[in-house]
Length: 142
Image 1: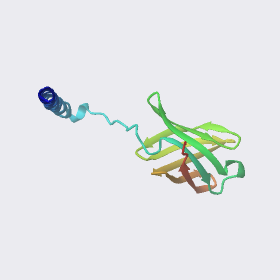
Image 2: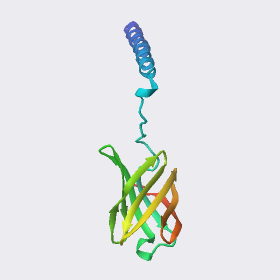
Image 3: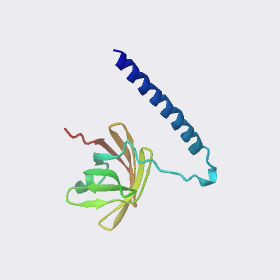
Image 4: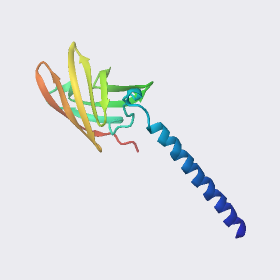
């Protein structure tokens, strides 16, 4: 029992020392000049992952699909899988739980903006014919 107490005290002392030292380092890092700081986009987002969606007013072959949103090589990417096509999104902008990107299908550019709230995806796509809704849900892997 006595050995346990001695080891526990040593572990506790080491922990407290590391916490104190770590806090001092953190304080020094946080006290930087604003000019040196650059905006860093968060990698984590509720949007990362795979989704199934339905697009209002879309042609039958584009009405249902799936998309994957992922971070690779320092960039955010979108991969859209349609009935008979697979397309990578261009001009991808991911901020928090909202993503915007464009895809080109049959010579037409579609601007897409989506937001995730938990397991639900909602947003719009816009092109020459107007703006229409997209709804979706996260693909659950079992």
